[in-house]
Length: 235
Image (cartoon, rainbow, N blue to C red):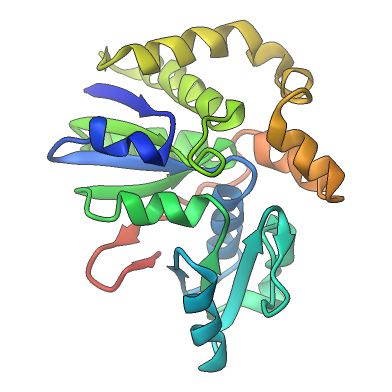
């Protein structure tokens, strides 16, 4: 299997190829939030890249999760915290979802052979899914407004380590090799290392520090959200 990492959606065209399995990761916090929705019984997620479309869904009676710049949009039922989506609120419901970065990354890679949502809470489940079916995996980091961030990149390094433990993996560019080497340096002190990162501070400044530990803790959820190209929903 080949493995690569695209550090920003703005660069995706330079990393993609035919028959890719793309793992979209937005560590803080969209990936974990989508995992939590499905784990708590949501029937599907409808990812949309802009808030105007989310408002249209809201006017039709859909439940909507919407976030911009770490804050819940005024029109939305939920924000971008995994803990917003309790079973009582989302079970057997379709949830429309839009965020600053994560849903935009999904839109960029929506024509890939297979698109999965990955993050630390479901990392082993995503690794196993890729090992069972993928020829080439691209970790697509959501980043921040097309800029590279540390936490999504480090997920790629953690993902590479786990794949290497189970299979013969070929790194397909310097990008994945660099993030793997960085991960090995900081993995035993991840929370402390991330405290200096841009988005960690954004969450702290917007009273969302309670989400951080959940978003960087491995294997609390076994669900792998999968994007369906036919109906443009995640199951």
